[in-house]
Length: 581
Image (cartoon, rainbow, N blue to C red; front, side):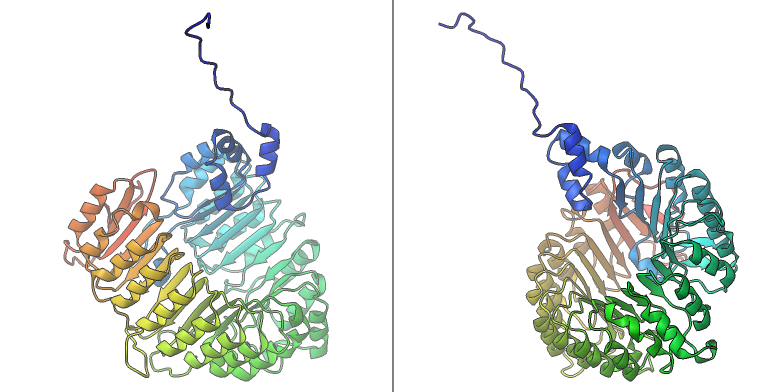
């Protein structure tokens, strides 16, 4: 008989298969955001280990969390990627002064992350004062990337160049920058030798070539150099002589009158670029000087010709030297014949983007059609990502493309005339996108266009089980279309809708869905303020923002609605025209 009938229950012994030091060492080797997030959910020990070992944080919406919460969760961050405005701001659908100013983040980071080394911003408002604050308050700062940001000028770049003594990367892409001149490039101290990435291709003003040449000469680890169109072929030749080790090059202008020496000298210079894998720029390229890049083409995996208005024969001659391309960006001036060359010469191609030379000129009948797209699909079976602007398409062509390239993860087809049907049968384009979602089971991102009924959305809801982002414009017949998507796509994270007939029932059909998504955008739809208030009341963890038009139109209609999940509640910097419900 047990002499102690009521023994105390022994305390549970907490055990972990790894010592903290080993666990932290292992977790420090994991770079994937998704993997690290999964690791933090295993147990408390793993949560803490992941917390202390994380060096980089990605924030897809600057209003989904506060910098204070980020700092409390991750005390040792060295690198931050931060996104601001909704993507439709790229199409001028988000009013100016909407928000997304980076300064509040920098103010907090200067206290908790004085050791911050990298900052990558997209669609954020960045002032010259913020750039100066960044340069002066983070003594070890090394990398700045600004993509589609606005609010600053080249004076802000001057502050970065002057004060960031250990700068490794300065990447300025497609920003709304006030270009006051190229003097900023002369502000790098002569002691700076650490630069590895320099991209100012999107700036317009001339820079001091003497300063650029000296900078390139002393930065022996420079691997990415993308200059603007003011750099001539003569100057490019001098730069390549200084840095033959480049892996990515963005050239300046290729105009004939901008070269003085023999073409063979420049051709030989390109042949010395043994490590080159990415080539862009080629502004104003002419048939006479385009061949100078041929010696470097065999090793290229990414060719960005979105600034080069090439014709089909010029593209065909160039691509005949590019047998290893994985990524290719073009302007539609190459026509269907140029895309035939893509299909013939690029069997390893995985990504194709075809941009319009002039998307707003409705009188242009040139460009690319379904014929060129099918040619690419026949010759490039490994195609995964496509962005294709055109003025005509057919259901049969898209079905053929889907059969030829069943591994699409990103399919973005933009038929530039809204509501355009299959131009041969005059039928809606429903079966085209039905073929895509039925055949391409790995699809993650989809942008649809043309004359579309609710059947397209029924197909998407039924078959697109891995879809994460859907962009819709001028499509649909009724609320059912949006309901099909919200109820049928379990992995949907971003839904972007403009100029569609979806109304209150469609909006409220996602009540149980929106908290698992990053964001919903609806503009020029049939949504009312009352429906938005219902959504805000039923889901208090969502921010439901309505942007009111300044023209004094019907206050009962919600013309622009932005819904996103957040852990900090309504933002405090909303301008008067943004009503948070």
